[in-house]
Image 1: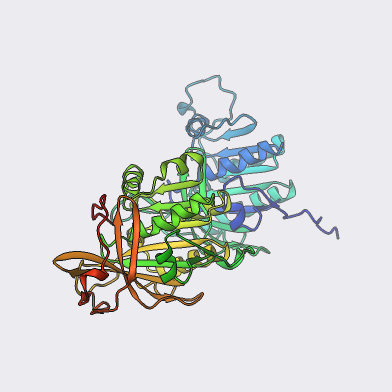
Image 2: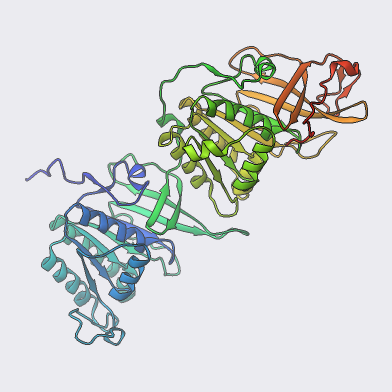
Length: 505
């Protein structure tokens, strides 16, 4: 008995960004893979990317189509900016659909042929081309001609055996157009990959991929978000924080505002996440900008994700409180991602963060705000688990993460839309308070895992020259109830600077 070589079923590139990571290297060579999904889920595009990767590797590739004409395939490819030169396309379509009667193709009525003849024509083309990569699109025609699950299974099994005999790696596409999902092929396929398309109540459609089977491979299970862009499918593998770790120094980064660093025990520690929580307008974003700009001035790359503001308004507002971000954006040190919650899936959001950290070297990440992140996945019940994985990943990369969360209400008892205090290493609480007929802001640190911090309450002011933090205010009551009252002397409060405009966010 001849034993298979070590290269048999070895992983080969899929040509789809992110899919190799999910499949632990790629498709298994010389095996048949079932790609199933409803029409419009991206099967044809995925198959084209597989063959284009083969052409780039110098392999012979064949696309067998029973559902689309060669002209339609070329049109799809051109819209993605691809050339299918080097890929043999064998079509089985009615002759009246061909505008060129001299076209050198085998054109038949697949519905008028016996099933065996149709399969034999495909096998003959494989014998002629001798491809290393094959896409068979789609199995629905074979299912219709079979008129029975037993015959259907036998014919697909014959195809699979022929592919294996000729050392070809094949993707068999199935559009699931039957009334119920047919599981006949799952047992005879080396791998089963499913593409799904979900239309939410509001916003653009969400696409995802899952691998339900792949023999002898520790693939990454579960659902993974994907997008179809010009250039093909892009998959965002589900983040598993345990797979990512790097060594880093556990030092603290200062904000260059002495009083703010003092109340936080010296600054924010690397590899930690800080939750800044408070009502709208209390100054959460501006406080985060203080640490962000200090890091940028030291030459450290950073990422700021904005759910609530456009990039132009963000830059203008930051400049108005003394933080000019434009030079850092132009120099490439600061990357600002504006995310529309209605059009970005949680997986794509995580993918953007990973790209900024792994490729851009970001040392500080600001997410403004978590309220926008919640809106990005209104129908997702596992936001806390996803946020846990993301924060753990950033912590293991030595990144300083600042999360901004707006509480419901302005004064009085306030409620957070989600409780992430237990996931955060530090929690900074901002509140409004009234003194001498004016609204002022108070700042306190209620939690810090990585060291000591002040348990005092300090006044927090924002003006056109930046941030100011006053001395500890000892005569407060009712801070944690949401309605702090200051009963001290006016002299202990911060005085306005000449340029103070009282603004803040």
